[in-house]
Length: 121
Figure 1 (tube, helix red, strand yellow):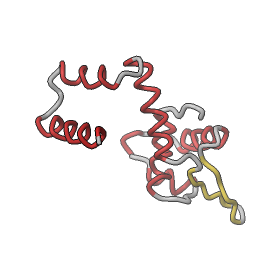
Figure 2: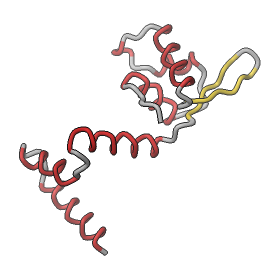
Figure 3: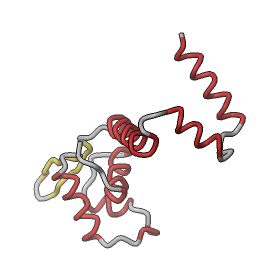
């Protein structure tokens, strides 16, 4: 899978929520705070088409875009890549980094314990 940039992921998130959408519909759904020009959004759509992360159906003169890359597959790939790059593939090191900086709440700890018990069975 080709790497999806953070900007491209904004488009993917929109299409994962609702599709198919036209370029104008995607533009309308882009957060105004991003202050992106229409041309920028269309460039991102074209990049995603080249990466085969999205596809389209043409109806008359209008293109309707939809995700080809499934969200679950993206999350799995991005998570694995992050874990490899930052923590050498070690989930233990990931959790330890959060614990070291006291970023695990009591609820997080309980949920992790429950998950570990479930995985042991």
